[in-house]
Amino acid sequence: MKKNTKIALGLIAAATAGVAIGLLLAPEKGKDLRKKIKDSTDNLTDDILSAIKTGKEKLMNVQKAS
Image (cartoon, rainbow, N blue to C red):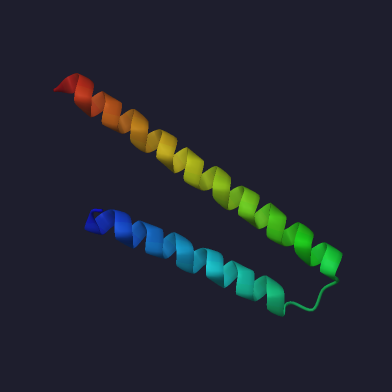
């Protein structure tokens, strides 16, 4: 795994952990908290999938140009 990939994965993991800790420390009802956690993870998943798709497209463009 390349250094940049490790850094990106580390940042994503740290951000996810920060969001989870922040939500767990918030004084809210369990139902509301679970919904917020689900929404946050859904958004994070969408962002990651979008980044992967963009990366694949860029990679394909580089390969076609070669």
